[in-house]
Image (cartoon, rainbow, N blue to C red; front, top):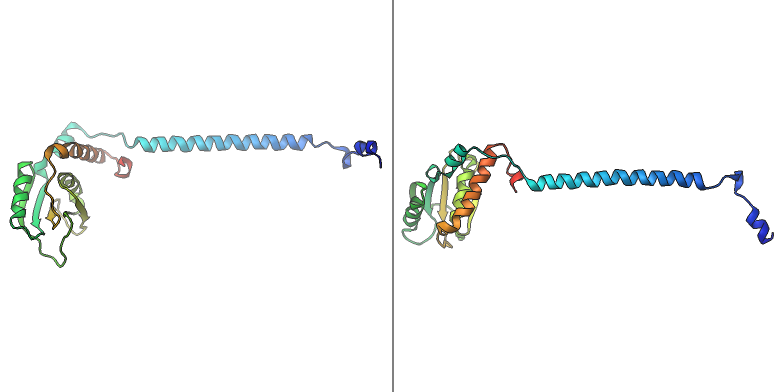
Length: 191
C-alpha cells in the first residue's frame, strides 16, 4: 500500500472524530464551571467563618459583666509559702473581686505549677476573667461545681498577679466575648 493510499483510507463508518471532541469539550467546560462555583462558595464560607459572630450585647449586659464584684472567688494556698492566700485576697479585693474565703489547699496532689483556677459550668466567665489577672494559671473545669464561684489555688510556681494595666485589655475582650455569647453567639464562633 502506498503512502497516498494510506492517506485516503478513512475511519470505519466514515465519521470524523470532531463531534465526540466537541461533546467532551462542552462536558469539561461544564465541570469547570461547577468546580468554580464550589470553590467560590467554599471561600465565601471561610470568609464568613473568619468574620465570626457579629451579635453584640446591650450596654446593660456589658455593664453587669464589667462588675468584677459579681465574680466570687475562693482563694487557696497550695504552696509552702506562708500567708500567700491572704496576700492574693488583698490584691483581688483591691481589683474589685469578691473573695469569699481563704485557706490552705488540702488534696492528695501538690500543685507544682503557678496555680489552677477551678470552676463549674456557671463560673466559666469568672474563671476566664480571673485567668487574665494571673500569671501561668491553668483553668480546670469541675462539672460537679453547682454555683458560679471559682476557686483560685496558688501553687509552688506562683509568680504573682499581672499588673491591672496589663490585665485590662484582656479582661475587656473577655467581657465583650461573654456579651456576644449572651447575645446568642457560640464560643467557637468567637475563636
